[in-house]
Length: 269
Image 1: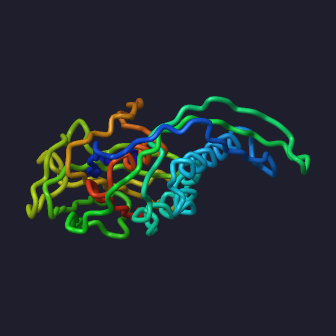
Image 2: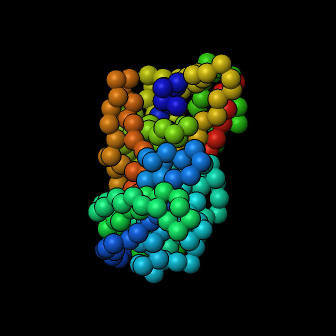
Image 3: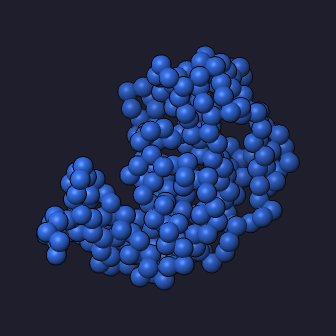
């Protein structure tokens, strides 16, 4: 979306360094190559299954279906299904990082080709749940905007916090706050802050990139500590581009009691 608007939404996140991280070796995932599934897609899906296997081996098996939804979102356009579901409150651990050890190809007992991936993974285990006293009111974002209309909004947190905002569109993702115009800062508990933060802008101009109504998805991550998201690259337009996988790995490395997440959708007509 930052291709279509000068938007600086904020995601705040905090990492709980006291969490336990375990190293899982030789987690395995397999995916058949059938129908219109390409070898590259099959490899991505096999990595998803290997992550699930790593979580099982780490003892995080209570909500495997939630994990499957999360990691499958990395290779599809199901961001809204992931972040608008109750599964985030169920998760008690996550794959923080992994290395692919081997990629093998073969034929199974049904004569279907498959790809099998073996990974070593770092799995973070949470010892605390959500902090119900940590909430943020985000006000002013409408469900729909006319092409060229400006957006403004405000936030009021219940605790001192920091913010990072990500934009998710189609199979793309980008960090849109902090940015070169709106710098990282601490937001104080109970204080209302209006966006844009800079007086140089009256609002964020929303422009759709297609002739049809365009759905946009914003992920706000508020954290108690300052934990910047740094895994992005600047493209030619100056956008801070990243991936859903990197965002989820970063966010889920933060203990649930140290962060609160909000997922907001709107349409540009």
